[in-house]
Image (cartoon, rainbow, N blue to C red; front, side, top):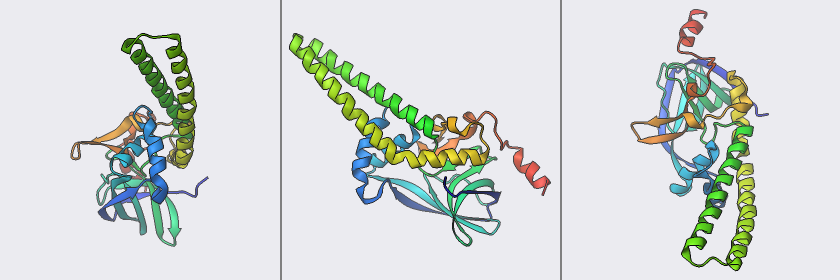
Length: 251
């Protein structure tokens, strides 16, 4: 379990800066290349994020955020920061020191957007299922494609069939070795995500998979990584639009 806190209130001060995020640090390129193999077909939010990292030479253009709520100073990085000063938000954070916190997520009842750190958005169970599903799709498409090339490219002999069979078996083990290692390197994203879902009070946090609700930015013409219209997935929303009025009325 990670040490996380939840607090909420209006953003009293907000500063947003352009920045870039390295996927895995100095040794990241090998891991990025491995996980990117899966990202085209897997529905895992973590693996999907790595496609952007790879395309931008292991770096993703993000926004660094400094905000203050109730005297608490919070810092974090998100793909985009679509909240405003004086907006009411619910944050999940980690304490860094006395009055300084690291932002894991920012939820806005007003806009229905949930910002999470890049790579977050799927529970452990859902991440593993989507990675396996994506790997199987890639495997079957590849081996069937190779078989069709052999069938229509030339006369198909028994030796060709044996070669195809051997290559298919080897490819299976290599592919799922890559899947296993890529998933392991990204597991901490899912562990944190699942804990965040629980702190927000989402029903069955171990079943939450937010990737289909990624927010499409009209300004950037881009599906944002780990910025979600979470109400498309979370049917029983603990934070409806009326939440702010009810909360401040009771203060």
